[in-house]
Image 1 (spheres, chains in turn brown, red, orange, cyan):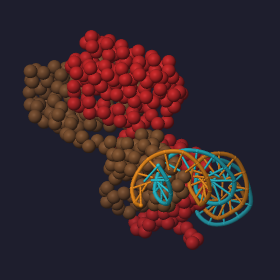
Image 2 (cartoon, rainbow over the protein chains, first blue to last red; image 1 turned 135 degrees about the horizontal axis):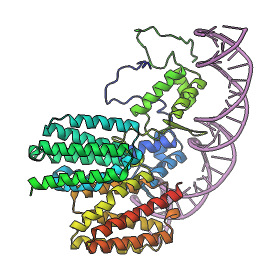
Image 3 (cartoon, chains in turn red, cyan, yellow, orange; image 1 turned 45 degrees about the horizontal axis):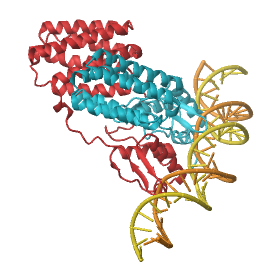
Image 4 (tube, rainbow over the protein chains, first blue to last red; image 1 turned 180 degrees about the vertical axis):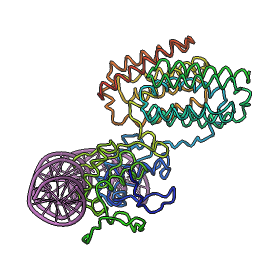
Length: 243
Length: 243
DNA sequence: AATCGATGGACCATTTTTGGACCATCTGAC
DNA sequence: GTCAGATGGTCCAAAAATGGTCCATCGATT
């Protein structure tokens, strides 16, 4: 398969010009307004410009703009009030207060115990061959750590991230990305080499391989059980160091 | 205004002056459009430019563009609807895009089934008297909906949010806030009154009360079981409407 | 010569957009 | 309180947009 590269070089992050940006239909206008709301151009409780003004701005008929706004109201981004206007109902998550700072390692592992076993069940149900290959690669890499706690830790994160991808569920993947982010930042102060002894790493790796085999065999019960044991083990090991 | 000449072959190494002016066959156009979709130029659910406009842009006949689009439809990247347009079916960029837009009601309930039962277990372990009082209040309010689907839905969200607060786990609370946000915005296309019949609401309320009692009694197994049944029920009801 | 892909039309059925009109409600000036 | 203006809610018929289909033709390749 050839790959005819006929695109001019593009700076990463620079948006590729989109053909037909001028053609304004209801879906496009809705998409644009949604982006502006989520980006905070219109903040919580702000009033949107009047429909007639928006229509003029987008170069569309008022009915088209109304159809677009209707979609935003259906998705609970807006509230419309007759005679007053359309008001933003979407709360931007201003509470960006660093969630990782507020979470202890024990609380983190409790959340993982709650989420990951059933995540494995979804992974068994939805993983395709490509997902399994990626998981296999991650498995090989994490097993190549030679007892290095730091390397194992990175590989372990990647392996569990693969598991999240196997679910093919965008929300689950999004959630686990954040769990992993918290994990990455909340455990920096743990003495990894205290917990991740070569023996412990060997045990974890055995569980990883069992989990992989269970998913390949589409055995949901085994997968959830293994992951549950895996995380309970990690919780116990954690408590052994932080009594 | 006419396209004067079409050249066929490109000399290797010759600089490509501009995208789309020449040497466009169906395979090339398909490849270019596929790249743009995967790169996110056209996001999930966006509408592609009309065939006639694409034809003009690529300097090809409309039939050629149709053949290209046909390939993308065959590989499930697109869906075409007569009279409306071609819409992106590929969901790739869960990162920057609006997660609520990318999540289907079924995917949402799958995540809730994965998270909430074990969330109930944490709630049993960590809820204090104040949490239980708040839960009691939410319970009373949701039972006061008198069969109104919309009111029940709001109350139900609040009740489950209380459950998340009962865990006293900041990360779990943070995650569930986002799950709830997605839930609030992803069920727009569901006919709530189709699912939330007065009988269904009554059943859900009974489960809510059972759950509350189980938490008060500090019975973790019962709580997880009830919540699991509760959500499985919701999933079944959802599938009954969206077969 | 035969074949295959591309072309440039034309026409069809469906959906969306348009441009207007009128109404009910709310706000602010008086 | 009254009134004028602004705003969203609704309805309608005509026009435009859009994908689906078919066909005669052309050019290059086989």
